[in-house]
Length: 332
Image: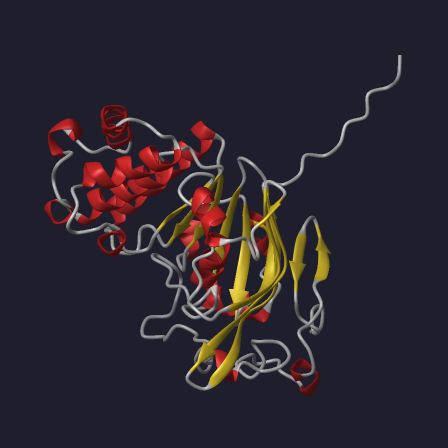
């Protein structure tokens, strides 16, 4: 009997050399530069960085929701199917079905003139061809699952009649309606208080585990990422400057930008000297049109030398899946 040969499972999501060029009032700008990562079924991946680093743009590129006029190069494969260049009609059959997104601000993600029951039921009717009665029953079940009390009674209520935390739960119900393989959560707890933040994150985590989904969690909150994802990508200037298992990235802090983010983090109960100011990263995130040709962090980095401006540094393998892009790694 011939020996059975096993092959490694193909990752659910494969991003290779992703480049996005946007049209700005100052001309074309490279918004994403050589982005590449993989995400397996059931795996959780975090994306961190300052505002303007390219986190939300990455999510929009994955969903095929980039601004008009954006130029995309490279490859995005979902279950082996190429998304870059896919006709809009085909993308529409995937969005809300095989891949879904929880947006940062639920009040803008929900339509104010339609009751929430209709909005949660819409993807069920569109993608799964359920009847109005079936879709309504499933919408009630989804809303109950995400913690909306008296869901059957509130199905005909409008978004403004719910609290911020409840609206976020409703957007999660919409995203999960068709059981997507990939869930993208873009700053899902930004507008919520600490208690609600924890509840929403626990809800997303339990649903990911329960349904075996892959999760891409975008946040500027280092604690949220540390507690909720297995792997982390650190983004700056449209490029991933450091990546790896979360505990390794947060423990080693190899890239100067990652070091700067952690140094600027307030520590409750920490041993900081009273009255001492927190360290800051010099300067501000440059506009897309002003990004340096080499390392995107050049200029703001205290270790910048002339060679940093020559080209985007190649990724350096630090072992154990930990990678960083810096030509001065290992120097004292």
